[in-house]
Amino acid sequence: METGRQGTTLFTAICLLIALLLIIQLWLISAALDAAMSAQARVAVPASVASLVLFAFNVSLLWYVLDFDRRRRRVDPDA
Image 1 (cartoon, one colour):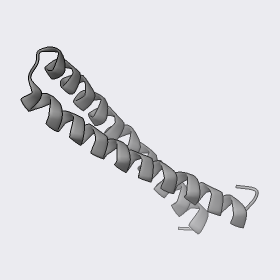
Image 2 (cartoon, rainbow, N blue to C red; image 1 turned 45 degrees about the vertical axis):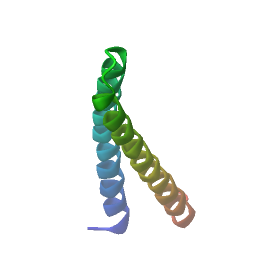
Image 3 (tube, rainbow, N blue to C red; image 1 turned 60 degrees about the vertical axis):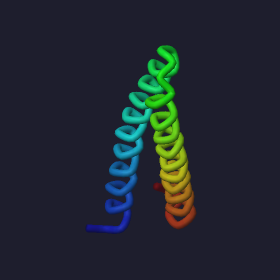
Image 4 (tube, rainbow, N blue to C red; image 1 turned 90 degrees about the vertical axis):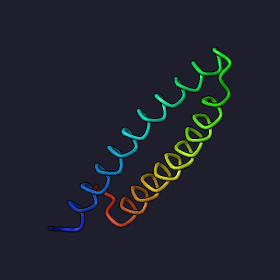
């Protein structure tokens, strides 16, 4: 498999992982908001913390994808 095709596969896989983690994060945010509205801090705090951790992980993955794309375009401007 050529390098450009491997890069496209990696790019697609990371984007799918970001989408999956984003769905989980939205679920955690809705659970935290529901718990906060019903005054259940026992659930709201861990869900909020987990959502923040996923947010940080998603930002790092997005940064990696953008950096990967920038490096790939520098090597092959026609990509």
